[in-house]
Image 1 (tube, helix red, strand yellow):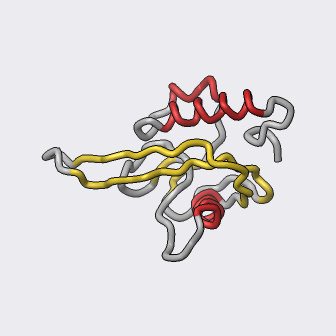
Image 2 (cartoon, rainbow, N blue to C red; image 1 turned 90 degrees about the horizontal axis):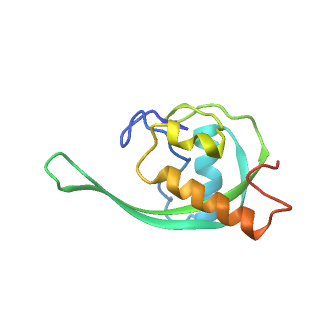
Length: 129
């Protein structure tokens, strides 16, 4: 999905956002994905955890994220931009380098995809509905 607001305006990324007070990680994944892409998903497992600092033009830390990426199965909906997203699309893993993505996103997607394929080649949740 392409970010429609700061931070990372215009960059491609995966759905995500802040948790609400008392919200579980999995409930946040479901809510954020629905709010940003109109897709209803079921989180299957944690794919990767990353920490990311974004600095302003002076070099001061502007945003500090701890990102928990989940592998999910789509259970309903069709991808449409909503909330703070300007565009939604699925792309082939082999095409990730062609997209202007937020820093580290393509590498995380690739790592999680390869790990998921190695773990369970017969039922890849990234390709099934």
